[in-house]
Image (cartoon, rainbow, N blue to C red; front, side):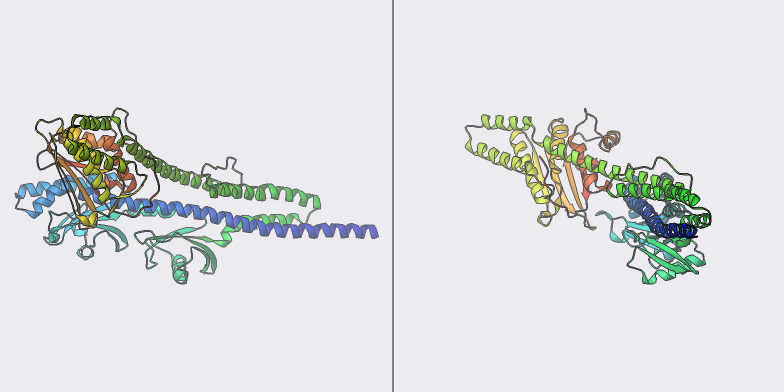
Length: 562
């Protein structure tokens, strides 16, 4: 009896140990699974937010492109001046066709509206009757607003030659289907859902009673990004993305019971198996370890690798259980995030490479040789030698400075030194018009001189009797600064300008092409945005007008190698 009793005691002891171990493992598994799912959901939410921010940027850039197009400017001239009715009708037709083309070629933009408040003109890609006048009255430059659960961006055209009362507004509406796709991307697990809400916590899309209850409960959780919330007799895990620039916010929710379901299913199986012999219980423990703990270990290790910056991490072997879906979602999200990171790194490398090449190409030997040769030829004229030496010193002192950011005043001084040297060597007449109030405005270095050098080499020197070069820098009403470099050379045709812009906008420069303008264009786009790229037109003398517009911003003064 004692032996039997001892066996039962031993069996009961091991049974208690198994039960206790199982309870401990269950607690650990539940916590680990929940944390893992939370990380996956947060990664998916960050990805969806990045897509939403990217589309916002695309819409704002598209607005600038439309308002700076030739079709729009021609129509604006017709609106401002006396015009032939037929020409005006054709102008309206052209701009409407242009807007339709832009709408078809841009995903996520469902409507374009041009509106002149003063003459009360309206051009839309939809029927005019579908455009609400009350909505048009809410126009405000460079603002996002909402109207009847639609999201609009407004940009007002501003130019010196257009009176303020005749400046039109451009409305661009975000496509609801595209927003719906982005909303669904934030829902990484099929057991939950996602809401896309306005600042007043109203859902952009229809919400059922449970979702409305969740939105009501969010009122006192404004400062939290992840938390639990009870609604409709059930607890949910809430994850918020935070509001993007246009005020929208993604909110993902997951039922806690559904998140715990894999563990609960295993608990039921294990509880039934505990009634059998210890051997079966032991086998189950082994299976439990392989099917649950090992999978949690794998996804935890992979998530740590992602946290350490390894976005190539993938789970190769997918188990035949509930974790297969989680692993697939993990692989997809890490791959998408890795693509975004690689794209960002590539853009930064391109910027650094373009700046480094531009800085290195400034000190070319031919320029120095020609300047020294000039000094030799005027050795009998001390004043000329002194003047050339002073300009050379200023020129090389500036381009050898290790500064990532300079000021417009320093950039203009550098350009003056270069032009003074060239004017002493060649028959060149130049003028630089810039207000002293702009001297302290920050700008990336070595921008003006390559454009001026290009104008001298390819315009003034290639045309007989050409000698004029004019640089103008002035501030626009929206706070941006415009730079214009004009010459009296032969100029360029529309076809030649189009070919030049195509080459300048290439991400990789061909070896046989000139590096000067390409580097300047790439650096402007990389540091500011696409709207800061070089533009070309005809100067007042019939030559070439090169211009670019920047919106000054603060930047750190990191050292760069010249």
